[in-house]
Image (cartoon, rainbow, N blue to C red; front, top):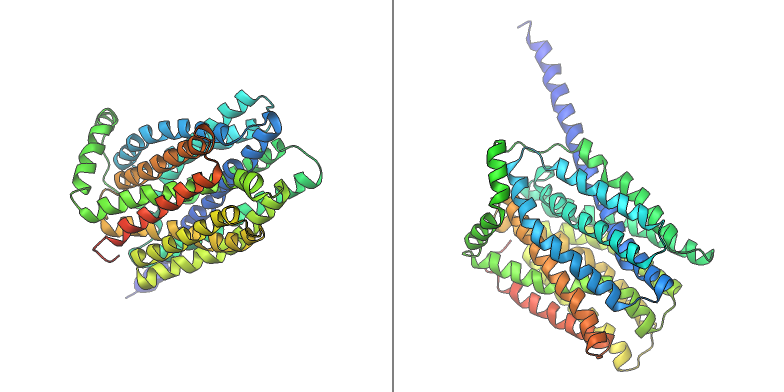
Length: 422
């Protein structure tokens, strides 16, 4: 009897400590999305395209073909790193390594004025961020349970968009002070370090079965063989096959449209660089609550139904975008379409990550490797197709966006054919 009073506070303290560590894990994982979003929106979507124009009159081809080359490497190495992450005790050292490489290359990009060096540093940063994202996505299973996965994922995406607000503030400040865009890279790199590194120290991974060093080394040598075997295994499930094909198609539309929005806004819509940044700001302001809403909707009606709604909206909005130049509509319509596009954007990740996990909760690291391959291959396709259609074939940017509309619709059709409700 005398020992009971001592056990009660001990258990209480242990429970409280566990709760605090869980909250820190969740906060650090969510914080990482801010830096990740800042890179995609600030470096890829805004400053690098503007920097290319400022330094050498670069355009669609300089951006698109550079991204395509980077993605080729990402696609080749993603399965290897995904398989390794399943074999070792912790995924965090891999995430930390590539986060440091990404932040450092962005920082150095701010100190170069040479076009070739700039493309090289951009390539290192792009490659590192996208490899790190593979590990980051797989850590979702360590901080969530099935019943709250959509809500937490959606909230993280929404919070991540606050990083874009910082990016736009930087851009408008530089525009107002006639400064060059190199300063934007320096600012983003500092923010990226601040937001990406806490996860390395605070996130607590769930215990998993690990392999010895020999097995890990063997897994490295056999990574592509393992990926092929995994592909054969999961593609026996027609629903996973439909999801991967559908994701390839709709991500070609979404990622490519995001990367070339600056060029399209300036060259086709007729906006100034400053106006394009205000458009981006408006989209982000609606993307933040939109992502949270979509995440909650996933938990209420399911990931599949939510994703279908998002993709229908995306295809309609993108169709409206090309209607502006085709029918000579008022260019101010782009502001309205941006609001709708921003509201829809985060819903894709809020829905398809839980959908993938719900369809198969085994071999998550490997599955997220395939998940990454499909989106990266899609991005490569779009990044290559946009300049090829617009510049090489000479059909222009409207034709390039039309291609993206068809990709979005085709992806939607595959998602609709998934039979299991998730």
